[in-house]
Length: 212
Image 1 (cartoon, rainbow, N blue to C red):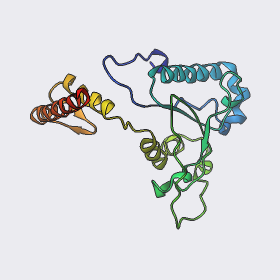
Image 2 (cartoon, rainbow, N blue to C red; image 1 turned 45 degrees about the horizontal axis):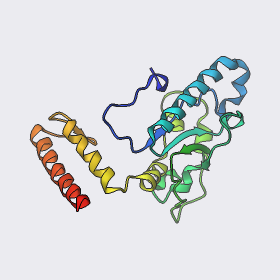
Image 3 (cartoon, rainbow, N blue to C red; image 1 turned 30 degrees about the vertical axis):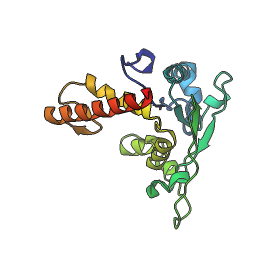
């Protein structure tokens, strides 16, 4: 399935949503093939985009939906994006992103667009994406990957800052079985128990502070 069959996870707090619907049938890079694709492929792309937007809006969490420049902004019920950016706007977070690729963001639920942060001493942004062409394999991956600098900037602009929300997120650990995964690290049963004990103590301290 895809986002059209997605169901919210029970008992979990959603703190951020980022959606990247397929752009094969909507991006201007494939404009020369629009006539051949016809309306059915565009309809499928629109359904996925709208399902992503509905799920993101439902979550109550800040969200962004990313698409390269394309036909979506010309569709009345979607409208123009809330923000545009190029990867080189955030080379201050990741210097390797010194390239152009006009990207659109539809956002909501209090999403904070990070400020432009460019690194010093870099040359003029290159056009590596435009030179790859509509190919498959590694070059297709290059065209579709999310710029690391932008990802880091969005995280820092939208990460949860409420101690209460943070504690509620920590309490989710209590529902995870021994041997759980924390981030990219696989915890042993003993490590998981220690984490749960530490987080329960932190939760009790915060609850006591809030009650007093």
